[in-house]
Amino acid sequence: MSNAKKVTVETENMEDVLPHDEAQAENETIVEEDESELELVDYVEISVNEEDDQVSVEDLDEDEEIWSGGPTAKMIVDWKEQYGDVYVTSVTYENHVVWRVLNRLEYKNIVKQMETFVQEGQMTSAEANMWNEEAIANTCILYPAMDSGELTGSMAGVPSLISQEVLEASGFVALEVRQL
Image 1 (tube, helix red, strand yellow):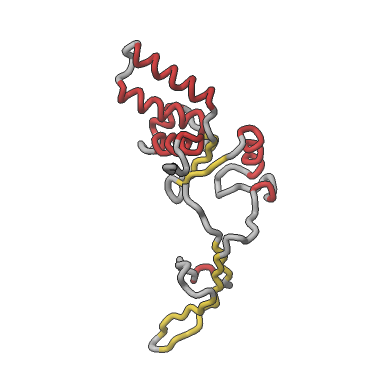
Image 2 (spheres, rainbow, N blue to C red):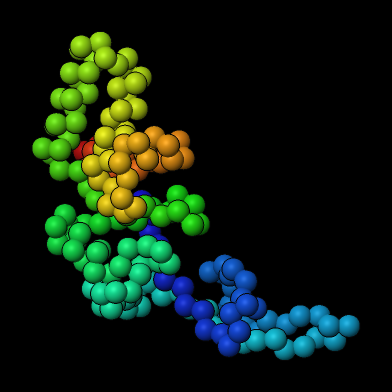
């Protein structure tokens, strides 16, 4: 999982704002060429500060959507109360998935079921691996609500991606390992 930085852009006309690098000046004037004259278009202030106060989901109006068409702030707060940490993965610019970590009992049950399928000859080991990813994703995805049929019918990598991130956040991958 990556570290995100909060970027604040203040301008009177947001259509004139282009993506900016952190390396660019804190204050800059954007100009555009108009028949060999330079004309002032807008003043843009870009500030990157990791210590800025960020708005938490608990501070939002409970009916406010986190993104257009997405879950409301109340849904996220309720999930956080029920499951603890809640995460979002942006699969595309328009496709976001909200998920939670996997607890030990859920993990043991998934492994036991997968082992049963393999021992009874109902699945090959490759099929069991894919089933495992889908079962983890199905268990932990909170939004959008998906059943196993929707998971297998969606973009092929979604169950793999979400299950990998769930396992990382659930403690199956060490943050750092050092030799002593």
